[in-house]
Image (tube, rainbow, N blue to C red; front, top):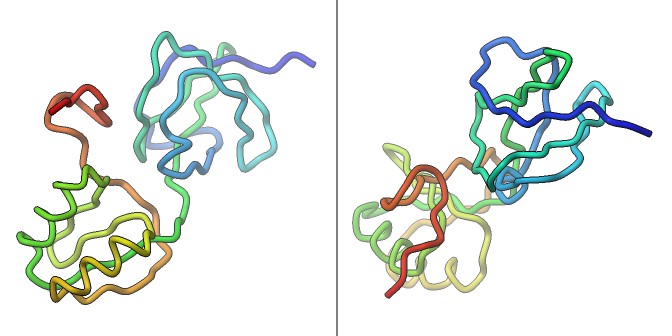
Amino acid sequence: MTHPVSREITHAHHPDDLVVLSYDARFLRRKTLTTQGGLSFLVDLSKTTSLEAGDAFVLQDGRVIGVQPAREDLLEIRGDLTRLAWHIGNRHTPCQIEEDRLLIQRDHVLQDMLAKLGAEVTPVTAPFTPEGGAYGHGRTHSHAH
């Protein structure tokens, strides 16, 4: 069976359909995805790309498939956010920074460390859209010590 193909990413406010992807699944180059409406299509990008909410795949036939972050198991962190963000960043952990909280993927070791640092840590389920790296847009893996 031949699937429609997308080799292009755009930004779309009113897509024809949606794919709901976790943070890890939004980092891809070549993969078959299935939309909420049941359409399977092949993503075949020229390079590995980090996708965010509002990004969209353009299929060869012109249809636009929007990207929506999936709800994931996360830790909500409250307290001295500047200090806590430093400790999270020092461990190269993806972190979503909001005005009154931080969100990270669930990790019992980090949960224990943050609690010992005085953080209020609560398991939550929410879409996860962490900050991109300082050395490029989206995710970066080239930072070396």
